Amino acid sequence: MLVTGGAGFLGSHLCDRLIEQGHDVLCVDNFYTGTKDNVAALFASPYFELVRHDITFPLYIEVDSIYNLACPASPMHYQHDPVQTTKTSVHGAINMLGLAKRVGARILQASTSEVYGDPSVHPQKESYWGNTNPIGPRSCYDEGKRCAETLFFDYHRQHQLSIKVARIFNTYGPRMHPNDGRVVSNFIIQALQNAPITIYGDGSQSRSFCYVDDLVDGLLRMMETGPGLTGPINLGNPHEFTISELARKIIDLTNSNSELSYKPLPSDDPRQRCPDIARARSELGWEPKVDLAEGLATTIAYFEEQLREGRWRSIGGR
Ligand SMILES: NC(=O)c1ccc[n+]([C@@H]2O[C@H](COP(=O)([O-])OP(=O)(O)OC[C@H]3O[C@@H](n4cnc5c(N)ncnc54)[C@H](O)[C@@H]3O)[C@@H](O)[C@H]2O)c1
Image (cartoon, rainbow, N blue to C red; front, side, top):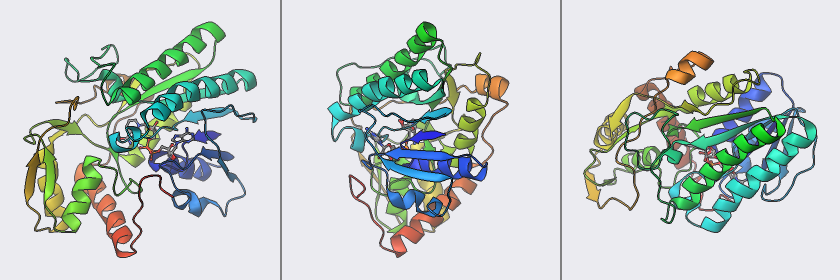
């Protein structure tokens, strides 16, 4: 099994689970946002290999399955080098699809709810085509991921490749970057430091948050389906919270003295985002099981430990 972006947040949890299941795992990462620390516990396994490689360049190896997760996922990181972000999604997809074609591997794409842009329908079903801005600061990510989906479906139609496209919604858990501006990690760190919690906009915009173990379970189930199932399939938690509710929950769970501080909403920030997971339920028998309080407690414990040990990582993750 090849996991690109395997040293990142989701990828490292996926590597853990694949090793647990007894697979031979090759983790490929250029450490742009991922770190060796995330997979260090796997180095002891003879069935785990880590390769430093940028997927915008071809890769010649032999594998049965490819999980293509490589791509910075937070706006702060993907906007740092937007040209590289588009290259990672587009050239990366071409290279990994080319590899899958050459060795006859099945390939799963970690796509995103961002393909729906600022959606005009709610909740989002897979049949919705999205409302994206092609020239804004988020476009390198959104349009890159949309183009990657196009490539996956064209390789499927043109070369009969066995593809799986998962549209991942906001996911959180241990090993999220402490400083990448994503809402859950931001709020937890601010709460743990009793600093003001920054809310962009009035806090009434809603989000749904899926715990990482549930998400990885969805990816594994999807890869195990027969060639007839291509997706796209939404994977996320349909239970909605407003950003203000999330902030208050985190303040409660951390016993923090933090107050809420409101700032203007960045451009292109979606007002509302929530998956319709009917397809995941019927095709994969999947739905999230971990509730927000339980998932937040584990995530808070992780960040407390990071903070205690002074393990802060900066952009680039090195
Ligand atoms: N976490 C979420 O909420 C979420 C939501 C939707 C989609 N996704 C998708 O899931 C995937 C993983 O996201 P994540 O949250 O784990 O992010 P992450 O930034 O922690 O992980 C991405 C990994 O890809 C690596 N990478 C980036 N560019 C690369 C390149 N050119 N070659 C090789 N490796 C490269 C990074 O170093 C990192 O280890 C991404 O494709 C992301 O778009 C994540």
